[in-house]
Amino acid sequence: MAEVYPSTLPLPRWGMSMKTATGVEQSDLSAKPRQQRTSYDNEVRYSLSWSMRRGHARLFRQWYVDKLALGRKWFTIDLRDENGVTTKTVRFVVNGRPRIDSFSGKIVNISATVVARSL
Image 1: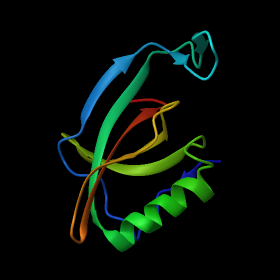
Image 2: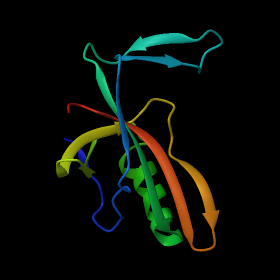
Image 3: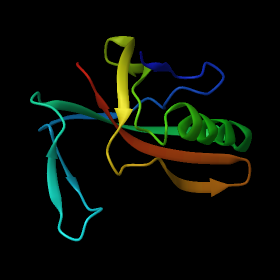
Image 4: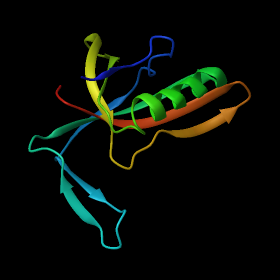
C-alpha cells in the first residue's frame, strides 16, 4: 500500500512539467553503468517544486527518509494540473533525491522528479 503525502506539508507549486519516458533507468552505482528495466510501460514523470518554511522542510526530509525509505516507496499526492487537483500515485526517480535549490532566510525551495504509475 502506498504512503500518503502529509497534509501538514504544502502541495507542490503550480507549473510542474510532465513528460513520458521509457521504463528503463541507468544505474551509476557500479564501475560500469548498467540499465535496469523498471517497467514495460512508458513512465510519466513530473518535475515538482515546493516552496516551504524551514520547519516544513525538516518535516519533508523526515517523511522522505523515514516513511519513504529514502524515496523508494510509492506515495499518493494531490497534484494540480489543467483538470484541477487530482490524486496521483508516484515515487521519486532512482538516484533522484529531492534537492534544495535555494535557501533564503526562512524559505526553502525544493525540487524533485517523480514517476507516476499512470496518467
